Amino acid sequence: MFALIDCNNFYVSCERVFDPKLINRPVIILSNNDGCVIARSDEAKQIGIKMAQPAFFMTDFLKKNNVSVLSSNYVLYGDMSYRVFETIKNIINKVEVYSIDEMFLDMKGYHQSPLYLAKHLKYIVQKHTGIPVSVGVAPTKTLAKIANHIAKSNNGICILENSEEIKTTLENFPINEVWGIGEQISKALKKWGLSNAWQLRCLYDKYVHKTFSIVTLRTVYELRGISCIPMKENPPSQKNICIGRSFGSMTSNYHIVKEAIANFSAKCAEKLRNAQLVANSLSVFIETNPFRNDLAQHNQLKTITMRSPTNNTPEIIKYANFCLDEIIKQGFLYKKAGVMGSGLEPSDSRQQCFFNTESAKKNDRIMETIDKYNQKNGRDTIRLAAMGFERKWWLRQEKLSKRYTTQWEEVITIHN
DNA sequence: TCTGGGGTCCTAGGACCC
DNA sequence: TCTGGGGTCCTAGGACCC
Image (cartoon, rainbow, N blue to C red; front, side):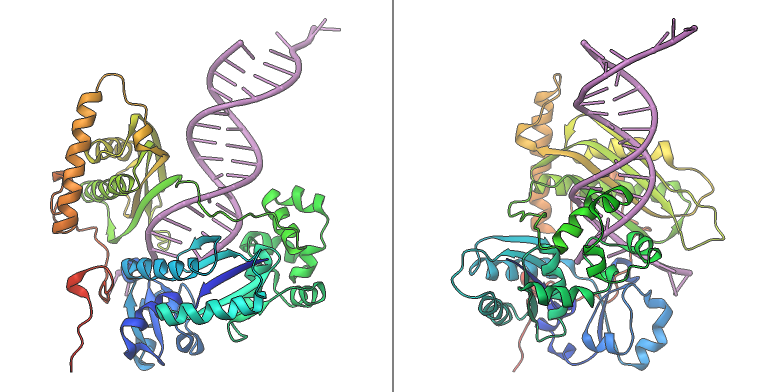
């Protein structure tokens, strides 16, 4: 049996732990750039706020309904997620972190019943972290996802065990909400008159494989109770590290885009060093605003293989500049750009370039020193000139809460 | 004015190898 | 007349996830 634990309205719940004023009222969290709604409290859902709605479309509505609006605070959510994980890890051995607010658990080998374990986990996580969770348990991960869905409207617990129960559940479960079935595939299935998960489960293997892919076939097997998606406890180290951002406003200015790319490159290099990885190849992409039909569009990606794998900031900026110059064109208003390192490998086992081992070692030490200094004195205190100071491309984050759990200066103060 | 960011996996096609 | 078979690696693009 697999369990899926999902934190309820996770980002909102994190904010509520540290700011009780937010309890029992509609709260929404906005994406980077304060653009779209990415998390809602139950109260916000009830008054009809939808996921991914752009906030600027409903400024008046939010005011009228007294909705609390917050920017996203990923430092806080990341740390709270880790606390939830540690709490669960104390009870269950095999845990896979699936996303910031979800974990799969291997429930094999416990003498307690799944129902008992589920209740216990829910209680302990709430008690130790302040985060409410829902628990779904079933024979495969895909079915556990469905169980979790049902748990949300069922006191937070759902165990799907016997086949009759599973059949009734699947017959009432919309096909497009099955894990692994997205917009495209559910559209295609609906054309064939299929609408619930049981119908999907009953399709011919050959038809599914031919029409879609092996991925969808796996989903069908999982619905039949045959586990095809194993637990990944120690996920192989990351394959890509990508930093991409929308700009605060559109720009056709080459220098502004270049400065943004230098900053994304530096952040990417820093992430690589933190994970003790080096990248073999580097990609840069630029995009115009897809919502502006009246403007000319230009989206392009350029990938190059670097001379030797690296996580060195100046080097990565140099390669990124090269890529940018290849793709950027005059006369377009750019809205978003990004830098991605791929072909990642551990930095200690890298193949050094034959000619410059000595200078590479020296560069590593410089980077190490800068990272340490910046960690102590604040991000980008020491920076490359290319990263600039103006930050005309910088995003908006107007309603950011504090980093309550990771910065001494921002720990909450209690007044008498 | 304003519409997120960070990932994974699979497939097809082209270049290249012997 | 008639032009192989079996691979790998890379890239781009499309699907999916939260």
